[in-house]
Image 1 (cartoon, rainbow, N blue to C red):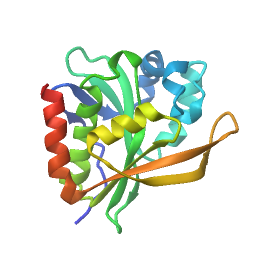
Image 2: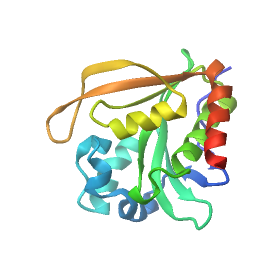
Image 3: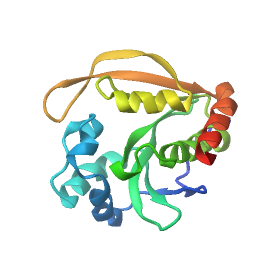
Image 4: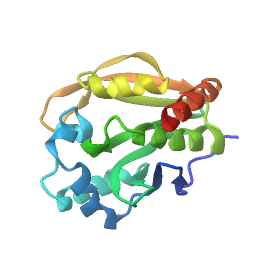
Length: 194
């Protein structure tokens, strides 16, 4: 039986994921509220000008998904966010996305550790059969990171999403299926332990 995520905290050796709270936005803005993070199309491609602007635009959007703040276990620093959303229980599918990290943690164990916790929750705790991950066609850094997770590239949705600047984003769709999860999990654990 497939069940929806329940919002529990997800804790690993590298990161801790807690549901994003209103009180987190000042710290989240300090971590990811800059042009470098948004340049690849994150959040529509335009960085908010303040923590208040981020909070105002994000709170309605995050109410529709399970949005987590990503904190380093070592010192509790909030360094990003990631979410589970687009829950479809009847078809056993879920979307892992809306992920942004402080540039200082790019290329570290943070992304594989975060994805391990979220995928483990989706596949093992909730029983989903399919997990979708997507990114903009122009965001080659994100595409490489998703492929490195072990996800299968399924194709490109052309003129798929309007961006904050008025342009249209082509979206690259990847997926991981439940029967692929054990191998993906093994690869993630190896990357984290390296």
